[in-house]
Image 1 (cartoon, rainbow, N blue to C red):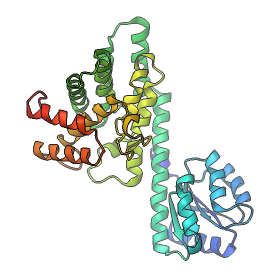
Image 2 (image 1 turned 180 degrees about the vertical axis):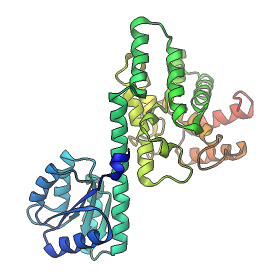
Image 3 (image 1 turned 90 degrees about the vertical axis):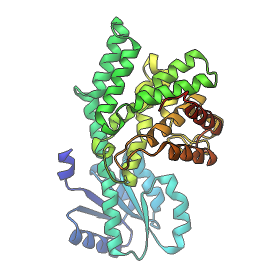
Image 4 (image 1 turned 120 degrees about the vertical axis):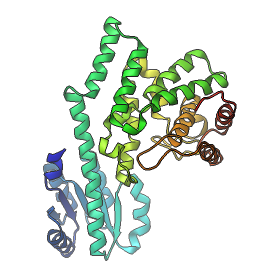
Length: 354
């Protein structure tokens, strides 16, 4: 990753008023070591984006030919990873806020801006851009060299072609790959799998579905292969950008399993084990019955073990506190309350050993 960190990052400033682009570029040039490019026409700015490696764009909202939202939407078609900041006057604020989710704007700044705050926002945005580039580079390395992903696929392909290894051995191999990256999750996948199986048995889930759930429990965090280890093992609170990268492990994990015949049935459980019944989970914001019973079971098991295990930012919580939090999560409609109550009863009755 060193080459990405050493390479100067580039900002494009787009505003139809020359005084604005001049003022912004001068302040950023004097206060940072960043490459600054300016444009007073959004149409011309699109050509600049096309021909340059842009890390962050600061765009005005009200401009001729196309407004800032339209401009950034065009940018997103070809450079979806560029971090975007929108400049807006007070009168435009309501419209800009409504459009933030549509475009994926990282931040919006009202005119007149505070120079110190502007620098802070720019650096935070560039940090996000750098993390995304680092993640993409890591994934490319894993896909193109003798890396963890290739080793994983080689194991699976060998298993399918010559049937030397059993599916169970493949699952254990995947679990070891995950735990080798994150020192705080040693044993986590095995415990989540065991808890999920016992809970599924208790509610009477069919045997073949329980077997798939057991396998999903073992590899539910396989997508963390694509998350930099420095983030996985960070002792302090994650930044918003870092948390977004961690959240993406559900998507990566699902995509790893989906094309593999023997693992395609695990796609739903792995992608959706962080969904919440009230729709506030990720990555798809599913609600209620939209979340499969297997994914809901996996979620209860995962949350319990996460709370009852040491993490980079805290020691494991007392069992009484863990149970209290599980109940609170169920009351908030984050977790399935029936599954939570059943799980707690099983823990209290020693049907689940913790």
